[in-house]
Length: 243
Length: 243
DNA sequence: ACAAAAGTGTTATCAGTACACCCATGC
DNA sequence: GCATGGGTGTACTGATAACACTTTTGT
Image (spheres, rainbow over the protein chains, first blue to last red):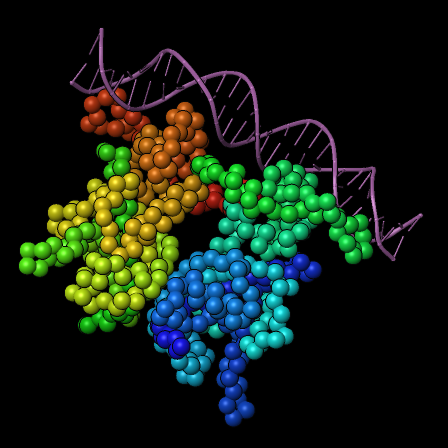
């Protein structure tokens, strides 16, 4: 079965991965490299992405693209914006690059972001020379991908305040301090530990487990989990107007 | 100058208009009508929309589409989602309709919504047989446009709680009760008038004018305005985590 | 004078913020 | 026994929610 690409429509994926150990919110990027007669023409990074196939929904394209790069499925995904400026692929290096690719110069892209754990991705067995970069220390990026990443990050910042998507970036069992560290990484702020603990522990969908951390060289801490079921059941819109 | 259309990419616009007099949040739709040998083949409504031109940004397409239908420019606009299912234009009536149009069956659309005042649109001088429908009483809709409208409405509900976009739907000078009525229309809830007044009047960017309503058959009420300047100046993100 | 809508105050409860020290564990 | 990170309590302040009657105006 041969799949027909739509040559002027693509999906690009901002893959966010949280690294518990370094407490760093990262983005997964792939290398764009091209040389001729010992001259390096293009050497930077881009988001993973691909054309939409004729038979696919946009969501399916995004899922496929993520799976191709990481092997992962069933990760949290959000379509957050379409990018379609006529000149979005018109940087000097982009033009050089596109010559070698089956790419329409006027391509619009539907951008998604994914939330997952850095450690869930095995970068060794991957043919794209993919690499994690901290969101605050991005390399040189091709196309309009820097902008796409920054808009995804903005959306993530806003969304993590009102929906429990933060837990998509953490293992199933986590400590309160790990959640706090993650909020601090994402938002770039300091949070008072006592207030944060109280707030989180009081949520009915945050469940203390009969377990403590193991293999830690200091005092092991209490583990918790997030219960989607309880969250969904108790969830009701509150219409707090706070503009 | 001839503009070249991109045949498989369109922009569709959900035009929200608030009608102060009937206190109704409306959507502007255009008629889709086709008959042959006295048989009515298609008779329903659709969103206004059009192909993206080669030289345009997506925002420019949306702006152009709104202007073409209403004559208005500089209205609040938001790109909220792209729709691209392979079967989104494949209803029976849609297929009949598309035969007559220069339309790719696999078109993805970037959907925008606009916020404006119903009274600002003059429907008489308009060639599309456009008509306002209350958001809660929509007619039969072509393509996937019902879904697009509902998703726009959801986004509007969420957004009006955290950003002062509500004032885009009201005249420059408004009364507190008008704002309350509008919130109630959008959210479908009842709000306590005393609490709402206090809350709104306490905002520094809500400014009491030296004016009262005129031409009203009952007690005229105090007029207020919204100051974008003050809002922008005092605005700073609050990182209230309330998932 | 009447109808209609505008406008007004108080209290109780809850959530957020600020702030500093002791505790349990592994080494 | 000590270094490390985990864990804890209180008081203040500001916002929200519940609740019913009086005032102003045009007709």
